[in-house]
Length: 164
Image (cartoon, rainbow, N blue to C red):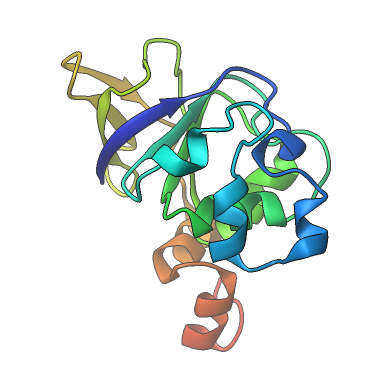
């Protein structure tokens, strides 16, 4: 997967991703995408492209466990989030909704860098702008199978339950 890096800092909580008041208005991904990161960067939602990747430091998705913080990202067409660490709940919500969480050192990735992610074989993030590569943590087992299917619901439709 290739795309542009959209860089945020550390401790990006779910209310920064999408404010909790927005989920009272609608849970539709196409609605929520218009308000993605509105508290941190009001222009972000208008500039995000479907091949962008979110890049952050440690503790991405901390705060509340609201699944709508993943729904808004998926609604914007973003396929992966790259961070040095995730909150446990955000990570699992991402997998369950088909958003690929990539764990690796993000300190050398800058806004606008062109990235190429291989999450299925080498588990690597290549920065094509800087001509560098960073090893990522592999996604294995059931989580890899769920992501390959496109999320938990498509996985269940495909297999009728968990396959171990």
